[in-house]
Length: 284
Image (cartoon, rainbow, N blue to C red; front, side):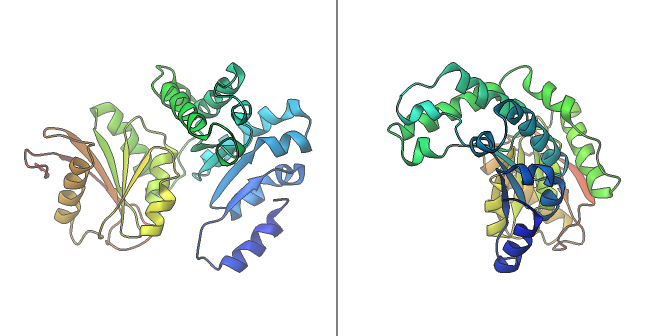
């Protein structure tokens, strides 16, 4: 990926049949990143390739800049390539590689990705396990959410962004068990994840392909379900699925965000708090 012209060509070819992730690996792409971001559904920071194309000492700051800018835009960002390079031949990573993964997670990347380590390396299972263990350890750190909070940008002046920001704040204030988003277009889920809440995000979508896309997004657990038919159905469905998926138990509370009228894509204008009854359904 060198410039927005490449993305325009890709969009013309795929014609909306899939999302487009831009792989940033050239200095030209770094210089025109804002234009590329505007046309992308997600971003990949290819540090290995950037390290060939740019002076090595510039790569960490470029990675941070791209990650933070993409997060602010509410789009997924993946940090990739040479994350556990030594594990292509060794069953144990270097301490520097562990720190590299941890820094990407602390930065709030939606995903970290292996390439040769799992595709052609001698220890693919161990590499995946190592990456998972490091990410889980970072996310359990007492500093993790405070660092993410310090990087959080101001919400845009729209009802949807205001609701998503409010949902995160209410969830943390009230100790909510799960934040449940009904989302057909994926926009509601992306807005919720942009806030990086400490509360798990459960995205319910009637669109299977969108549910799969959202599985890449930070903190989101996707479930395919029919769209809600009414406000009561919305609350009962959210309560039941959150219990079935193991996010809640009787007595817990959830926050529900959605768009009304139901079935209207790209609209987030409803926030509801509900409690889970003894039968796994809403007590409110």
